[in-house]
Image: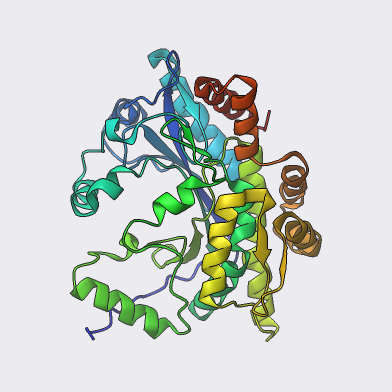
Length: 381
């Protein structure tokens, strides 16, 4: 084995929260994607510096909006709203609209342009066809962890509720003009990249350092952030970064899924403080849960514990929301968490997208219009 790579962890104030949202740039006339991120960013920061809340991504059809370090999900959502408004003000004269979702319903991956940056060029050169398929959008939730020794236990526990977050946020049923039959096609596309997918279930920090040292030694990665796990430590921020959710189609649902994520982390952190065991499950159950929630979304029958007991994901979500109510009150996200029940009752984005397609004889341009309208309204339509 190679020499372990020392990984310092910058402790953060407990359960602070930050959000990142990848948003598509859509042509107002055709509904197809526009390769216009560079033009928008040039107006956002004329001096070429990186804007703290509006950032470039892998593809030129994408803008990422990011919150600051916040105390509540509501505060973070407010940051995103202001950043979106700024982007839309620049985009509107260019005949560009903003849309959310885990994938664009009919855009072709082969026609997308990569941002002119060395790390992106290196990624595409290494991953080739699969790298060029990364026409996907997600939401990343950072939660501050005050003690490095909590990071890996909480990460392992979060994997037991992975399907809850993926099912609620699933918004990528279409790919390249076809209905894939999946609620979250993005989830299965993204895990094709090296070092993407479910994280290894490390028990001790030195195991993570050994893994990173080995990956650096054999050239799989050049830096830590090239580990693209669905749940990963972000040592330089002092957070756990939860990258499970598909791109949200509106701010209300983004806030709901982010609040549930935030509450899960704080709940597991509290269990550690009390000396109580955190839930874990065998890797094969975790992998099956990811597939089931990606395939069936809100209709997934998920595995709930290491004994192999099963339950409809929406029933499990409903019980979790009730159990987490006191946590949400402490975190100031009671209203946002309550919106999870609305998603359970009314359905997730992938279901709405299929309904729009069905009502319009399979016209996916109508689906794009619905995504643009939801983004503008800030709520499901």
